[in-house]
Image (cartoon, helix red, strand yellow):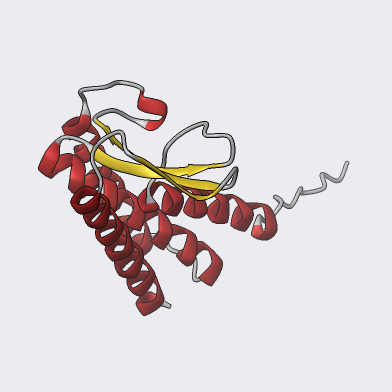
Length: 156
């Protein structure tokens, strides 16, 4: 299970960095290429803020937050980790997303976004998708495997 965590985190971080490298090499900021009309297009955008371009100019600060998230997940896994594969997978995707975007934020102060789905509300990258998959997987884990507290009956 430990190996699966690192394998997912490494592969998704690599996929994120490779796709961003490709976009930076072959597109200019603002370029748009439609892959499947109405479903997916590539639009190159550089975001120095958070999701939905909030807090522009704080890219390196968000890079530090990403490092803290990664350290927090690793410490959680080491000290308190319940041995559940589903949770481990969710945490791996979360770490991959934090690593992919965190690396760019620390190096460049911004991230490369390029994926636009559907009607075009928001531009993402592979790291953002990894974070979304991780969060949804962690929520599902807690919904599926949450233990309800046992209530003690008090005898009169």
